[in-house]
Each structure stands twice: as C-alpha cells, then as structure tokens.
Amino acid sequence: FYWVFQAWVGLATDTNKAMDGRGLGALRVPRGLAVAVCVCAVISIIPYLGFLTGLANLIMAPLLLSSLFRAANALRTGEAMPGA
Image (tube, rainbow, N blue to C red; front, side):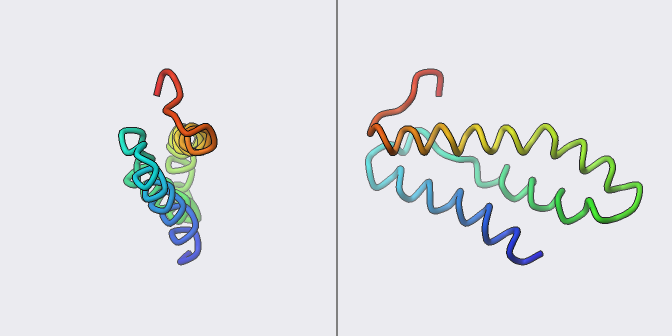
C-alpha cells in the first residue's frame, strides 16, 4: 500500500516541481486528486465498500491521468497546452 502512494503522489509532486522549474507553474497536477485516487485504491479491497470506491476511481483516475499527460506535454514542448 505504501508504494501506491509513493508512486502516484510522488509523480504528481515531482511533475509540479519540474513545471515550476520551467516556469509553467500555472499548469499543476492536483496532488489532492492523486491522494484521493490512492486512498480509493486501497479502500477498494474492502468488500462492498470497494465497489463504491472503485466507481469513484473510474471517474478520478482518468482525470488524474489527463492532468499528468497535459503536464508531460507541456514539459516536452515548453509551453502550456490550450484548454489547460
């Protein structure tokens, strides 16, 4: 369970540091969303409750990934993507 948090929250934190370092701080990956995705993933092993958190993760995980992809593209090109 520890590594779930280290991977996703760490990725969001490090991506934000890289964005700040390149002057793209306006486009940030929501660290709180990364924490919420991790918490729901860990809680999803509990019977019955896991179904609800799994449904929540079906919405939150794509939002987190979209934000990470947008930030990665902005780091690659050096500019904020339109619609960000």
